[in-house]
View 1 (spheres, rainbow, N blue to C red):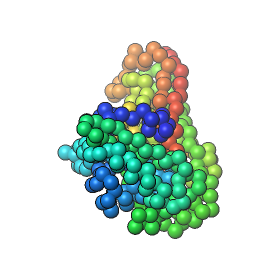
View 2 (cartoon, rainbow, N blue to C red):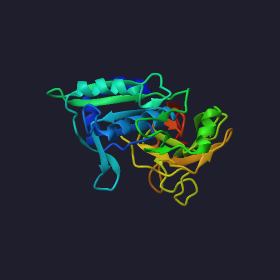
View 3 (cartoon, rainbow, N blue to C red):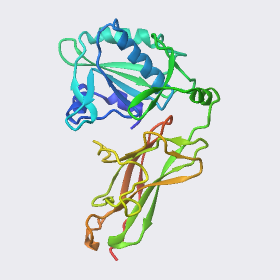
View 4 (cartoon, helix red, strand yellow):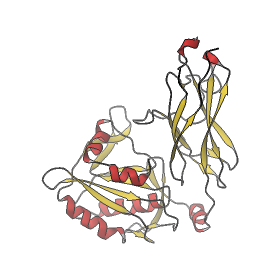
Length: 303
């Protein structure tokens, strides 16, 4: 689902579901509370400026106002509580007024909407599309350039700015699959290939696969090693792998991520599903748009 469609379909019930599911922030999702409903609080203005700059200079994103993010009982940063914003229409008016002042140059396509709850209170959603006219500087007292990586914004370094001013070629990623062996011993090797002209930094892959196939507990090499660090299970796409930095995929190269197999030490042929094997996925990396898709691997014969 595109960011635009997510923005348009998001409801107050969905926002509460983020908290119920303890949704983690990610490369295209940020949660913030509002300290004031008229942006008289300096932190609110800075949060808006950083989000506009960081998302606009990266692959775009959604900022959900009215959700507190913090550590849960398992020490994981996630959505932990909703804090509705009073006079939400006033908040929206100020959001619209500040959009052109909080970042320079202005980002085309920024949108805001409110999700009303009770008594004039509610939540607000800000959509920041990826921009082709950057880099964009965060204003409102920041006067810095930001990018999005993982679940946070970071100040851009000199080489980042050189890349953007020079219109560096971007990577383009696709999911790769290949089969090993047959019948109950079949393994599906899932990877990422960079078919673009720029280097892919901090790649991310999330997917669902037809059961009972699942990522191998033994990884790619039999020593529990995966090609990317395994992340916590997702709400929509269960299996998630991603790098917070360091790992890159160069243009024209592929990187294997994980091995899928049937569960158990001695799987039996009758465990194979009598349907085509489907892989639904989402793939992204730093500074590129998230892409979703599916791959049909066909039916694996029992013999």
